[in-house]
Image 1 (cartoon, helix red, strand yellow):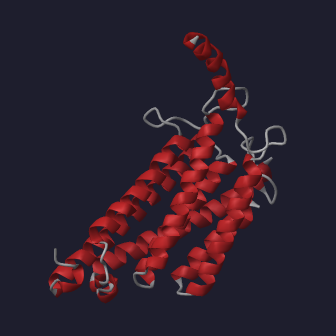
Image 2 (cartoon, helix red, strand yellow; image 1 turned 90 degrees about the vertical axis):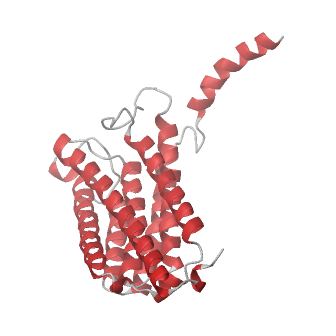
Image 3 (cartoon, chains in turn yellow, purple; image 1 turned 180 degrees about the vertical axis):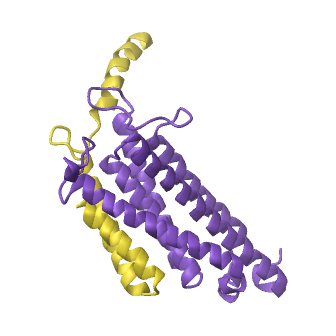
Length: 71
Length: 198
């Protein structure tokens, strides 16, 4: 997949350079959507989904002590 | 305040020169960053992770808009492409930073730190700098109808430098393509080693 992303970007740059603007923009758009798809694939975890619980876990540890301090 | 359209031709020419110099500088800086990243990859054996590779793609995307501005004349559409990929760079870099922000097994910042800052955090800074630079440029040179009247061809030296830099950026992208084929093959990318060399 990453190969396709780089291939479309390389072709877009080459087409843009040689003045094939329409084709270059089409390739760039393809590259953009492939990149977004690949990004979502890479950050998706079967365990967490798209969440980032390792950040909340720190908050979980802090929150009880904050609550205790208020009461 | 006098708008750019009401200004004499010499002033418009100067504003166009400032604009093209700005674009050239942005492309120069991005080319420098990509060269540094690739030097670290080949000289120090620091393999880029999938998100790092996507960040490089986003930087090439920013350059695409600039190259088109030099090759096919100034257009806001080209500026739009650059801004779009600057946003992609920001989103990917922020997510990658958050991924490794809390130390846990198997998750630490990849690669060596430069001035104490790791690559994903640098990418956030680069993306924010790009967006800020574009915002400042639009705020200062906003009414830039003059850019369509003053072609880059009127500055032959700048045109030549932009052509050389454009070819260099395309060459970097092609080298990255070959590198990605060797590292990832046609499957998923990993940082364990170059798949085709194992």
